[in-house]
Length: 355
Image: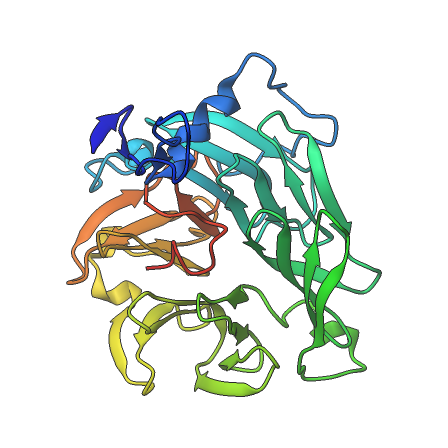
């Protein structure tokens, strides 16, 4: 193994049956770091043909407190975005490398950088995949009365997403063939009241075990379904915005109303939990929607941050020591979610990057 450009290269064995006796292409353990140069190429436009610049935010003058833990915007290379500011950011070495803007309105909730460099995102009214050159390679518009807040790549050819609606539906579409491979109605509070649509679902995930992990935001539970949509596990919690299945088999849940992140085991026992009051007052997040569990065991809490009045990201160790606080409203907006780009794993392999 050798270290090149900050990325660990794992050399594969000789190609079986190859007549040239050459090594196969090296595989990056952190594949997203290997595509970042594409976002700063000379042919990347300031605004792509499908982009619309967002209105200037009101919070850019919010002061950053001194002596925060960690290295500010330079702590991690990342893909970053949040509600109420429809601009995706790619950050590396403390600098913004690339942005993608979709105008006013609502809202970014889910997004992924893929190993081929493309970015998949939801924009409530639609879901799209764009290249580093800001070319739209796939787009699906929500029908009238429906909203899309959750998406997940399954390989490079398939996308799972949920359409909030009456009824809500979980779908898997093959973006190459345009075939709808899965389409299943999900339970909801009402089949007639359009006011219930917006709050139905946010983060829904397909697991490495081939199951669907579905947080019911306003119905107060997380449900796991098997391939045939038979319920095989559930957990009651007030307002689950997101849930991810960790490599250890536990489930990490973000409860938006109670501002907590809780890890529970298959027996539904709490094995770890974080609330704002567990942290020093200066480092407390004001709200929470999603979180990211890193390969080193740390957890990053994503927060809307009081729109200029609090931190956007807070990283804590397993024993709840604060490793990093991002409080930088001059450069980036609220943090609904973050994807750390130098963590190992292939994002489109379900469950591989959810530790």
